[in-house]
Image (cartoon, rainbow, N blue to C red; front, top):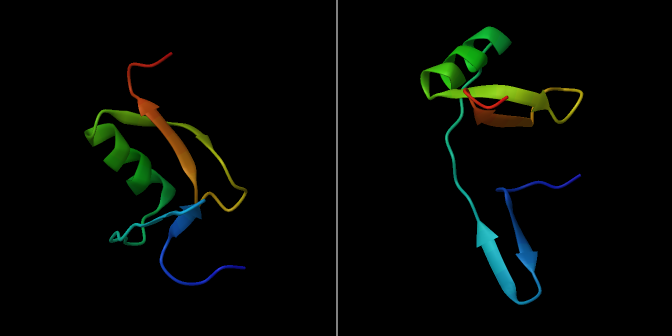
Length: 59
């Protein structure tokens, strides 16, 4: 298990990413995506923490 901010390394490069988050129900999250013109393509993990979102007009 890894702790600390998200980020990674690739050979001699390093990156970090800072973001804000807030708890949302599944419905709230999917509604927020829809407001941005996106939809859930699929959840990538069983706990539904990671998701693949695509343009709402994508097949």
